[in-house]
Structure formats: C-alpha cells, structure tokens
Length: 469
Image 1 (cartoon, one colour):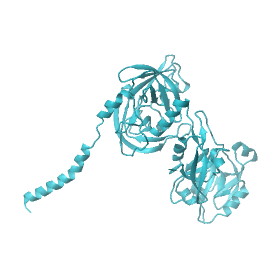
Image 2 (image 1 turned 30 degrees about the horizontal axis):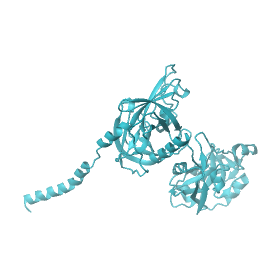
Image 3 (image 1 turned 180 degrees about the vertical axis):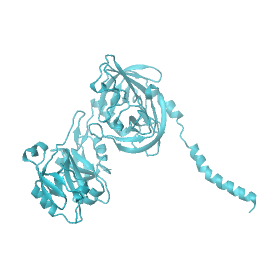
Image 4 (image 1 turned 45 degrees about the vertical axis):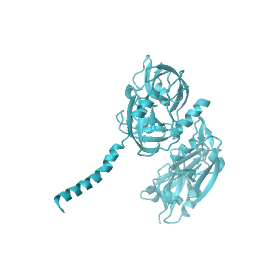
C-alpha cells in the first residue's frame, strides 16, 4: 500500500470517527425561541411583610439543624427585628389569560402585600387565591386582560438526561435564563413536618435565591415543573436543584381554583424501606416496596384490612419501588376513591381494595407509638422486660417488650437493635409479654432470617435479624 493510500485510509477512518461528534455538536439545543416566546409570561413576585415573624428574628442565617436540602430559595430572612417593612422576592408565571399566577408557597408565606411585575415593567397588586404548604405551591390572581400565558405539559413523561430550561429572577436579576439536564426523577425530600407528597425533579440547572416559583421548561416550551428548592453549602447553586413536577402542580392549582384549599389522598400508615436483610426475611427476591410498620386506628388502611408487616408493592396500578414512592401516588388520588393495592403478606401475594381517605390542608395525622418490656432471649442476645401496664394506653399498644440490654456480638447487636427499643412482633408472632417473646425466640429456626417489628423513639420500624445456629 502506497503512502498516499495509507493517508487516505487514515483520513477516512478519522472522518468516520469525527462525524458522530460533529453531529452531536450540531444537535445541541437552541433555546432562543423558547426564551422569546415564554419570557413575557414569567413574572417577578415582590412581597412586603409589615411585621417580622418569629422565625425571621434570628441571626441572619438559617438554623444549623435544618438540613441543607430543605433551605428554601426565599432566604435572607434573618437579622435583628425591625419596625420597617421587610421586602422579599421570588418568581412565578402566568397560567391563564384571566390572571392566575403560580409561584411557591414559601415566596408569599406571611406576606401582607404581593406585587407582580411583568417583563414589560407593568405592575399589578396580586390576591393570594390559596396556598398549599405540603407541596410548596401558591396560586395568585391579578386583575388584567390580554396576558401572555404558559402551557403546562400534559404529563410527567420527562426523562433523565433530557434538556430543561429555567427562567426567573435570581438575586433580583430579572428574567435570567439557565439550562441543564434532568439529573433524576421522583426524589423524596421530606418537609420539616416529615411529609413527603412531592416526587421532585432533580436537575443541574443553575438555580439561586429568587428563582423560587419560576417555571422549568422542556424543549417544546411547556412547563414541566416549578422550581422550589436547592441543595447548597454556600447559599448559591452547586448544581443540585429540585422542581415540583407538573402532575402535582396541575392537581394543586385545580383545587385551589375551585376550593381555595387542597385535599389529598391519605392511607393512614407509617412505612419504611425494605433493605436486603428485610427482603430476605419477607421472602422477596430483592429489596422493594413499602413496609407497613403501623396503622392509624380506623384509618383507610386499617378498615381495608392491611396489617403491620405487609409490604405494599403496587398501588392503584403504580409500582412501589421504595417507601418514598407511596405518598407520591396516594397524595394525587381523590379522597373516597377505591383503588387496588398489591401486598406481600406471609410471603404470599395478595390484592386488597382500599377506599382512600382525605388529608386536608390543616390536618395533621400522627400515629401513636410505644415503648417498653422484659426477660432474656439467649439466642438473640437480648435482655428484655414487659412494658409497664400504665404505659400501654399511653403509648397506644396492647403489649410488647422493651430492650434493656443488647449483648455484644449477638444476632441482635449485628442487626442494630438498641437499648430502649420496644419489640412487638417477631416474624408473624405478636409479642405482648416477655413470656411470648421467649416462646417466639425459641421457635425460630437456626440460620433463618426473620423480620422484627420494633418501636424506636416513638417510631415503628422493621429490621431483618438472622438467627444464630
């Protein structure tokens, strides 16, 4: 082969390898049209608060005990108390021509007045139609006509890796545009009250204080989410931002429009994730589902016949991969609707129909929990005693044993049992006294893995415990 032939061959190979890269570069999105068409409907929200709330009268910073990922965009709330009105801001977008505007609840929370400023510098006083702290959404309305509007995407069919765009007013810089990709979906970020009704969209779009309540777009210019939270160590973007998905936005907005408040589905259970040990104990091939640890008396789940120890694997046609998936699905179901629930009980699959209850905006349901009991379970390495009779009603249990000692190197120590844990179930055997505990332990097969239900600091949970030979 001649030198010329070798060169041509090498050039052809290099060209073939380069073409996909060139094509990829050519396919990078162009956001200009989305920005041109959508920016007029994105608004700046300016709020005035005449009296500072107690939470605002700190030292100018968010308390250290609040997790970073729960620190909202609308910050800078601290500082010494002042008699002067406090001003704050966020973003929002116009949803309909008759003046409805979507933003975050935390943007307008506690506001005495709300001003909406449009991209053409027009300003309108806004009425707060309704708010929903559980989803961090608020609906405003202004008296105006001929307004530009944005369109909500018809579903949540957003894919990880898909390009998305945000428009808002970070740090007061009006109508800033940032872009990135969807990093993950269905993120569970419990609120300060431990509630978890929003399957957040995680993106690497640069979001900063002031972007709160602004829209997140797909490449078709449709709103796929409302920017709500960031994870930050500095107060600015580090590439971890979270948006409320459009399915939640549509559900909340529709209810706020018609009722002025939000009611969501409620099941009445306390749940936990299934780890590898629990999966083996319950006969699952891999960790999945939401493990029921406690039921509210006369709650929807209790009335339908669910039990502590059931693993919910499917709810109303939706697969439940982790415990965080269940509230996301239940919360969007209308109260009084009947749905089918698939569970695993005693290592057998079962279907149960449940009539979903309702959880109003101001409702707060907590499931009472236990503590205490006794004797020695040598095979597990536990010293236990009965729960004092006077504490049974107080803690909402009919019986149990409280762990007084965990022997080092024992099966219980390996499983993570702690002093003070209250054991109420071993496998499928209720434990209401120390004698019942000893009997249940004695009947366990050597080398087997068994689920143990216990209550720790008021919270019911299951652990997987492997019995020693």
